Length: 372
Image (cartoon, rainbow, N blue to C red; front, side, top):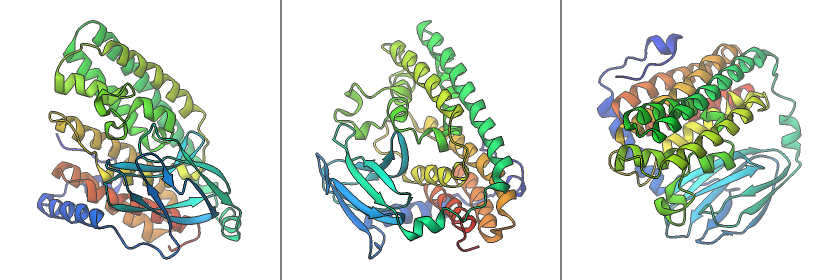
């Protein structure tokens, strides 16, 4: 069954045929370019991630749009995140040992935490000082036209929260009752709802670490006590094909999703929900998942389809508002969303997700007074 984009022009034209081979070639090029590393801005701040910490472990930059170069000096793939409390401001994942990646973030004045490799490593600090750039940016975006779209998107997030909580309850019951088929179905329903809300849900770093942890960022990988939530359940349901030991995992997931539902209810309604958050999720999807176990290919594809559905909802609400102030950026976003649906059907979606993330970012820039 193919992925179905939502209804606007992009939804009517999404049935693109014959693109699979071209996209696959693009995937190979994209992967190679990631390994080589892109050119780094002259004013980029370099941070090395070692096995134990960041070097330097404390940074100070001026507010505004800032670029960081993250160099992996450990022997494990690492991620680097900027955190504002429990919220992820920006991140870069799957940085291979010996390689580097760049990250650009629009930072407001304040004090942030930075993660440094393994989730058990101590965090560093990032201090952002006020600047003329940040003061000018704060007054540029007119939110008035986005009020209706943001309100509708918040309702959408609340519906996904309710759906994931209901399905996680069904999952717990199925696991406790020994029904593998019912557990798999309930897992899929709960997982889809979570991923449709992921542009916002994935920004809560503390809950994401419990709900959707990455084994490669845990000291003991799949044997680590922190390997829980959806990944642990997926391994049991689709790889090991057993419910043994999954009851407490399913119960904890249900509790964590209930907490997430409440977080979604109180999330700040701001333009970034429809621009920055989808851009960040698309960039994360472009990096893929490292070291996935055999037997999870179908689940991985279903994950991408559900996540893309959530991104499409954000785009569907954003495009009518962006069309007048930023027509070129809006048209590009529409085109890249169509291409992403075609790429998911073709099985090589990472480059298309990268392009989609860039398109969301261009709309954000244009609506903030940048290039139209």
